[in-house]
Length: 592
Ligand code: NOJ
Image 1: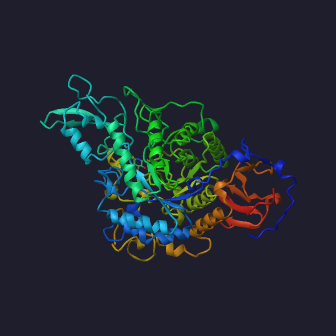
Image 2: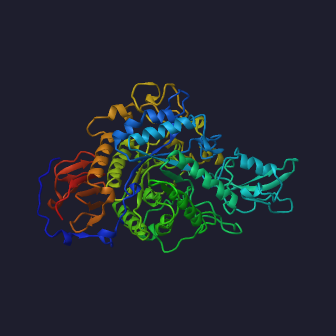
Image 3: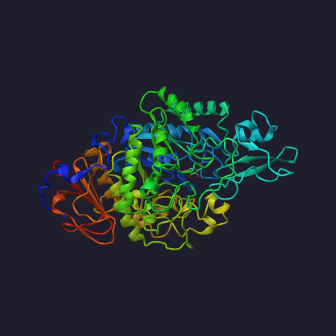
């Protein structure tokens, strides 16, 4: 569409409201790179395989850095590549200071880091402090040592209940299904104490009340900071401290398995005054740990960042994670959990900006990651799907891929226009859908096993990504097969088929990222356009010199002349001044 510039919009101050915020304070000042950065999540085992074992590796990532530079991101976050038995795809760490041979060596990491930095790309490492692998030498020592020993005290061990101690210490349910406790067998063969694991049986929780554990992690942080890492994404940042006495707790039926909710958003749900705090999430005691880590990062030059993976709601509580002397960012999972609805988006954007502004931080935005159904599928699912459950061949309401992709492109165009920092998950720039038809025997997520196949889990969003069409494994690596089978028919998603092709999802991302950088949208502010008669299905706002209009409804809407301007980006083709269903446009905003 080339629309006419229609400069007369009257007095812009009368047509705009500011979501209850002063435009100048909506995003606080500060030049740190992470405030406005676009951070690209790499899931190493599924990104690029250099050695042909069917599993991606660090050398593979290094070889593909030019594609990321071309995409226009600022930083990469690497999901775990540390020594691990891989029971939870590396989130079960057996040695925090080494690289698992599956992924390469420390020298490969150093090369990846150096080459990324040479290209101006920062590198964020994933830190998993809530639990270790049961293969970690600390846990091996804990079970080999007597009850009450310092080695035991590094983990959360308790006696069982009942005359024989064969009842778990409380009723907590693991995130992956089944009890949150497992019982060990003592070295002499007798049944022993129980240990806590919020996740899989192979992921025993550390005891963060123990000063020795805290000291170890200061050293682990320094190990990666010394090598030049630009920061850490902190796994389960809200789980480290448990409520004293470990009281019984039964979560509500709506709580998502990763902690995210699944009900449609209302202002009360987005940020209720108060919400119950489960005894294993979001305890006050975690904050002093991050204040301590903040000091460790402060020992280093440059702007190193701590980003909390904390499935904490409400947003005003999540904002506590990013107070001045704690973390710098927290993933905004309330945003990720919002349905494709202008009303919900408006609520969550407003609430997020307001909540983080109270602690002097911008919000983050995210639509996909390795734990949730890819947004090119999820946004077309019926509301109410629980995060972390996945979908598979027997799921009801499997959406039409074209519908999902259209919504995903429109949603991404909203996300990348927002002030603050945005996270992109590998493959979303190709429009990849969830892989739904994975054979049962290929599934690897512990959720699948711990629920006897009742919940599919997260494998569908973790399938290796396609680089080149009509090649073995779509160019993922030299082998024909990969650790999770790639679906047939992914040629069209391959990067080489989209690169340079106008209208492709890849080119849409590149355009959005370059306009975002040029117009400094990441450092801007949202100014809602509320009085131009758009219906409830339309989201319309300005950020700096760009007007963003998104139609989340099923019917096309006419764009009022007041907003027409140079069309900079359209998530799908638009015709003259009509915005089709599920489409977002960016227009050059007229002077305010
Ligand atoms: C959150 C991670 O993103 C997820 O993949 C993992 O299974 C759990 N934490 C446990 O580490």
